[in-house]
Every structure is written in structure tokens, then in C-alpha cells.
Image (cartoon, rainbow, N blue to C red; front, side):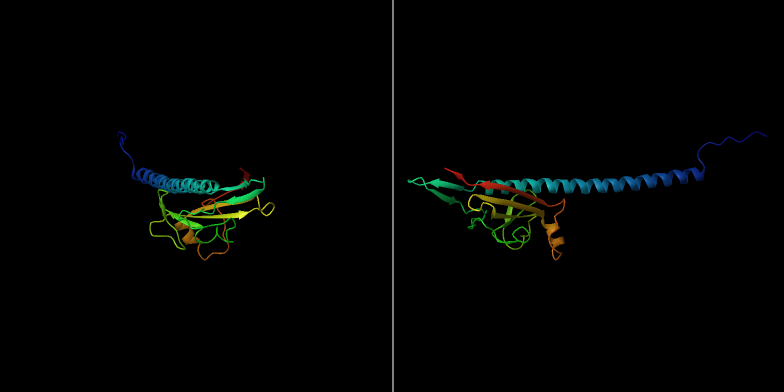
Length: 184
């Protein structure tokens, strides 16, 4: 009697191969989901940095200088229009402007970074909340101000609502800089 030649795979081999394929596919799908979330978070963070930088530059463009009068006496000159809605703001924001939506120290922007409005609560098309504070530096209050800008997604802010004190994380953006009065 001649041995029988078998061609093809046995049922056990097919089941093992399918099980391996399923395990690998599930792992790849999870990796794909993680990559999508990381890409979305990086996009949000990048735009938030750009929005914060834009506001810092707007605040830095305000006049914060000394003028010399005819008798060479220094007179402080301060521009107080630090808000897109043109409400008056003086150096010395109220405490908590970085933690709560406190007009005129807050505005909202859409997913493209376009201005969406201001107020105590975000409008429907808002994707980012941007808050800022302008404080005099205690060590030299007549010459130096501290400018701070905070940006987060509206979704993140809604999730944070009602929680304990504000906890900074890698998803939020907080930029700060100093501005000194100069003599003109």
C-alpha cells in the first residue's frame, strides 16, 4: 500500500492561522486608534500654541512705556485696549482670569482659529477657550507687567468643570512673558 499524499492544510492549521490573524488585526486596529487620537491631540495642541502666541503678541503690542515731558520727567503711558471686543482693560487683571471665563479676559475661537465671540460661556461654534491675565510684577510694579495666556479646547474645559483647583496638563497651553516700560 502506498502512503497517501496530502495537499493543503489541516483544519487545525487553518484555525491557528486565523487566530493569529485575528490577534494581529486587533493589535493593529488599536494602534491605529491610538495614532488617530495622538494626531488629533497634537493638532489641537499646535493650534492652541498658535492661538496663545497670537494673543501674547497682541498684548505685547500694547503701549507700556514712559514718555518724557518738556521738563524731562517720565510720565507713564499705558494702552488699555487689550481685548478683541475693545473693552477697557488696565494692567492688573482680577484674580482667577486664567481659571474661569471672566469677560473681558476671555474669548472663544473655532476649529480654524477664527474668533467666535466672548462672554462667560462659549458660543455654539467655539472649539477653543482663550483666557489671559495682565499683572504688574510685584518687584517692579511701575515698570514690568506679566502677560499670561491660557488656551484649551472647550470640550476639555467642559469636562473639567466642577473639579477641584485647575490642574495643568499636557493638553492645555499656558504661555507667559514679561513686558517692561521703555522710555520714548
